[in-house]
Image (cartoon, rainbow, N blue to C red; front, side):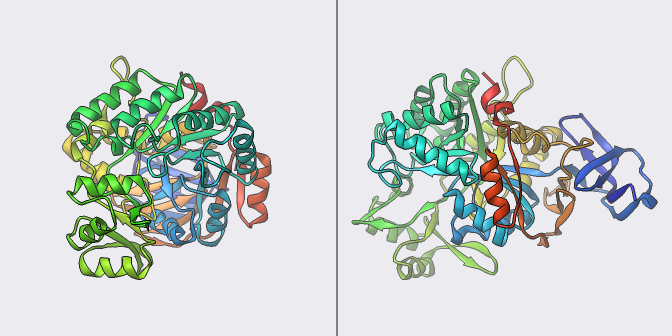
Length: 469
């Protein structure tokens, strides 16, 4: 047989080749074997008619959360909506690898290792030597690099800049949820992040979350963020289209442990303390995250309050704080002198947080005329693959990984998911198992194999992260 799987009669959209029309796609040994206007069904072991659907490279979610055991359910939540590859922004990486082996649903996953000065370092002002040791250990266990969680647990500007510099010197990835002890998780923190990066390379996480109108209108903040990204191409970035955020509802010494949670309470008119959190839940402003029926759901009011209290406040929480105007500006903004997006990718910051809506909300932007389908496909597939250096992902080209997402062109709902030549989802029903780790070092890839996973090494030196200036 020439093909293990043959997708017939679909509307293929591929940003790398520019294909945008009716084609057949053949997959063999986990790779794209052929894309042609007509491939013979008799040459395939399995033929799937996808007429009427968009056929695109497998969706790559460039920012998710599936690292802790409570969040491993996020693998199936992502696979169910057509995500084939994702990058976890939590950690520690050992937990991500363990979860991928146990509940990975056949997906390809890369992971970052969180660095929180004063929590997983000896103190709040870690030395270069300590950060270097943490980085080496993370890479050895399979991480692509580091994640700074400044918005939730801010470090000093000096410590933050040190983490960015160490990662760059090591040649690994580093992403930043902006915010330090000087500026918060807002547009002022965004400006500071650009300054702290200097000439170093940095991934600015979920740009839209810094444009919630805390200092000016959300639209004005989004336009400023876009202009900063236009003029600093050493930064890569993503934004998402969900109206809710995700943070911690944990209370310590009478206050939310996360500074993001405190901001969200203020935005809703509640005091940033335990009393305010309780009132926000009862009042329908705060939504407690709870596992039900194989997925995370959001519960508010009296029921949500009781779940939060019964858990000793150690639950996740979401607030409807994301402005749609700023989200749409950031999803569609382009460079002034070329047909290139300012914010590189559309992510979700989801996984186990119930906002895995990039396809559905992206399709809505297409219906509005804000994006075309080829533009949306670029932001969901090719761009994130280039950001992280996933050389064989993001395109339906011979020799690339057999990763495919098939979606309804009107609703954006995923119909079929194929990961490295294996069907992992059919009409929202997840059938894939295990997973594939994308690691930065051979040592990290080997550790994943010992956990029962397949793996490969990513060459970050060829990624946008390191090649774009």
